[in-house]
Length: 219
Image (tube, rainbow, N blue to C red; front, side):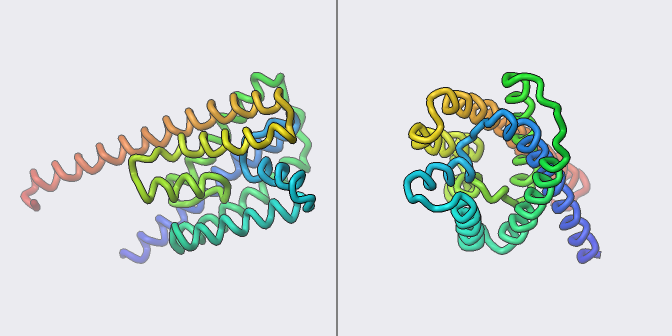
């Protein structure tokens, strides 16, 4: 019984992670890339390092991803590591799929930025809420939160991305940085709302279970 329940929970987690990365892949392929919106993530960091180290971006991007996976294994455990590998696979698959489809659904930079912010925030939420990462800067934010629960995951992602964007002035230019800051703020704000609602929902469930046990005389 417990084994079947555990298997069901694992499949549910994988489904959430897949849906999350489908949203992220769709948002990047159809709104972020066409508008050249940067967000301070792994790709943005790779572009900066390429200018400094003169190393091909593919090597840098893959190298940072592998490094983050190792960090997941060391600091977040085997469960997060295995789910993060699945997350990375799903993102690569869906981004490639939607990028190849070349859907022309852009409207204008303002609307596209908002849609991308919502889609990517929801995707991050699906992964983080299931003890997985997107193998991006959220890895560092999750570790900080594990060390100290008072540290907010969404806000940590925001400040880490801001830091990367600040270093990116030499690569992107002022306009791109401003757009990246706006995107990061909206995206992290939505993610913060979603994560806080989940925490509130979990607490309500725990209280309901506690009251039920008390009424039944089990505690």
